[in-house]
Length: 588
Ligand SMILES: *[C@@H]1O[C@H](CO)[C@@H](O)[C@H](O)[C@H]1NC(C)=O
Ligand SMILES: *[C@@H]1O[C@H](CO)[C@@H](O)[C@H](O)[C@H]1NC(C)=O
Ligand SMILES: *[C@@H]1O[C@H](CO)[C@@H](O)[C@H](O)[C@H]1NC(C)=O
Ligand SMILES: *[C@@H]1O[C@H](CO)[C@@H](O)[C@H](O)[C@H]1NC(C)=O
Ligand SMILES: CC(=O)N[C@H]1CO[C@H](CO)[C@@H](O)[C@@H]1O
Ligand SMILES: [Ca+2]
Ligand SMILES: [Ca+2]
Image 1 (cartoon, helix red, strand yellow):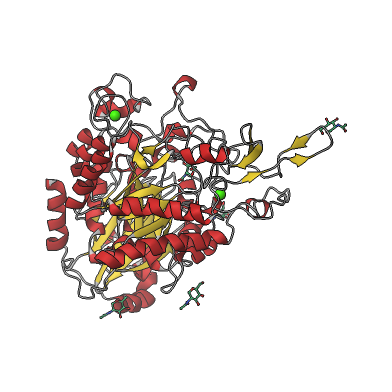
Image 2 (cartoon, rainbow, N blue to C red; image 1 turned 45 degrees about the horizontal axis):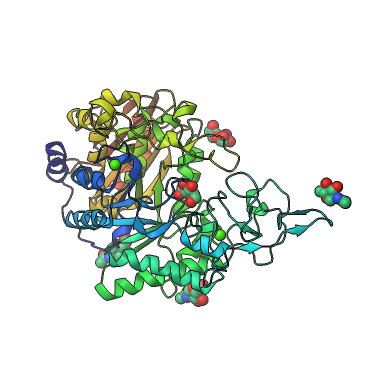
């Protein structure tokens, strides 16, 4: 707390960053929000049964607020048989007893709002659980549920044999069709057989699912993250898909059908109806792995708006052999395609390996600098602020029923480990002897409590970054990128006469960066505002000034620093350009 306070004072006072924005262009809250993704099973267990719950999240809200979070996204906590850990919903309007009660939800919602944060819920519309009442009634052809799902007769092979209706393959391996002995028909499922797809060509299903949105909006939800949007519709002709290994052309009848966009816009209209009533803008974010140019249509326009924020996941696949050319492409494919109000940066999630495991523990500060200081919304998966790593589980410890789908063979449990709160047994996550998944073995030294005490910890660096993130130069400032060399990347944020520069060595060797490398991209006399733990420079140190000693800096592998302009030494760009042009040969 005091560190963060000192830091803000340091920023505003000694570096002259203005507290008020002169150009106070009004942005919607999601354009600058820091969204914190909570996997409810793993955040905090309040009742010692080994599984995290809503009361547990409630207990930890002050922590969440203290690290600079503006909005919380809680993953599914609805009644579910938990075959897909909650992404198989049995009752959309009930809290699963393992997570608590609807009263717990109300209490949590109020506490989130009281702390000035927003609450985003997960909306899982493509499929229900096969244990859902609607499915059981549909299977028995009981009206009005008969056509709530997608049912098809078998395809005839010959007099004695039949087969599945077509060749469509689901995300979790196998056919998209499963036989129901009760109904004597096949039902469609884009994910597992335990997740039958809803039939959105039936207006009653649309109405039913809009009611779900209304139910949670009435209880104070500020928005939704919509799951698996590309899978909402399947072509009505049910023709075989052409055999091909290319994802985009292979799934021409089951992926990203044109009706998906219209449906998302209908949901947005429900949210806007609430916003009109109370003046509070609601957010519709969507999960979609598609190319940004294909996602543009979901954003819509002012007269026909859709989802404001498409999740952009591609940085999740960044690997240590990605050089600055590759990263630059991944940054610009989003910034060149979307309007700025739709940028969203994601490093990790519940389906993919965490940053510190894909890279190194050293890389954590660097990647947090990326996503917290780029323009737009930043999505942080719980634990990323600590640099939490993947679990390496034994077979008998695995709980996820599937491999990762799409031919992947990893179990997703590894990315869903319990939050590491302190150094006590089971990391303070649960008072039970047996958490649902084991805690990471490094919990005894790398946990919230320990990192709070260490000024250079990932957590404290994260907090400095989120404090800086609230400054107008980051919320409103311009954005420029520079490939300094193969492994060092730089981006700048500037507003009026203030500039923030972020220099990142994403390579595995020490890199030397000199005035001549950064050229006139930077005003003179910048000093270090924030550094990664492994950087050999101190906060406040001046760099790239025109004196012999600090014209160059050395950056250790996977290190990063944030530079700010000092009011003491303003050097205008034009003078710099002039001097650089004339004297560069001699000076450098
Ligand atoms: C504020 O900044 C925006 C974006 O830089 C610019 O388009 C706008 O004209 C500015 N408004 C004022 C009043 O300066
Ligand atoms: C019918 O098709 C099945 C499956 O392809 C095959 O095993 C069976 O021999 C066929 N029967 C006749 C009578 O052709
Ligand atoms: C907004 O989008 C709709 C649907 O794509 C389109 O018909 C309409 O012309 C667009 N309006 C504007 C102002 O661009
Ligand atoms: C960066 O990586 C890409 C893709 O691997 C490669 O094509 C390119 O040559 C690399 N650039 C440099 C400068 O090494
Ligand atoms: C990233 C993401 O949200 N993944 C989810 C997509 O939907 C399937 C089925 O609902 C889930 O299993 C994934 O976790
Ligand atoms: Ca519990
Ligand atoms: Ca579907």
